[in-house]
Length: 124
Image 1 (cartoon, rainbow, N blue to C red):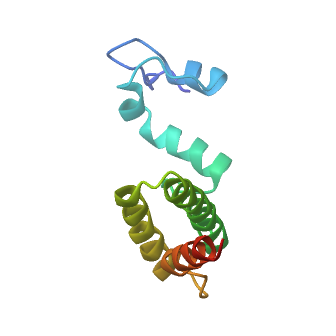
Image 2: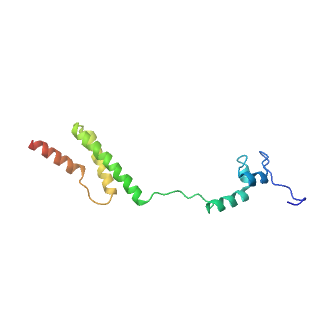
Image 3: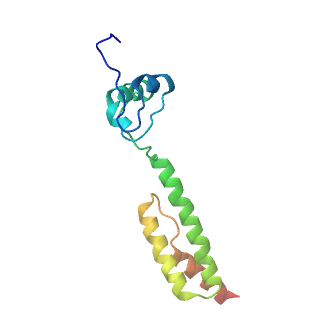
């Protein structure tokens, strides 16, 4: 820095550019505006970008989560059937059918499972 140049300093907290360059720390929220150009250079160097890009789940991760949710719902559905909670079983059945329409492939629907269960009970 030449004698005629003044060091950039945050008017809010007094943090000097030299301090930021040495420590990598800013003193307050206003520092981000005062040292914007310098902060962006550091972010570009470290991250390669200056815009935040969300991590997105892959289609496989989403599908796996849906299958896990279906399994939980299926277990709850069976439990409702065992306890003869018809209203809850019907609600769960509807939720499972909606989930099935989202997933690829055809699984046995809850109504088919319910029919099989009641058919087995009639036999015994």
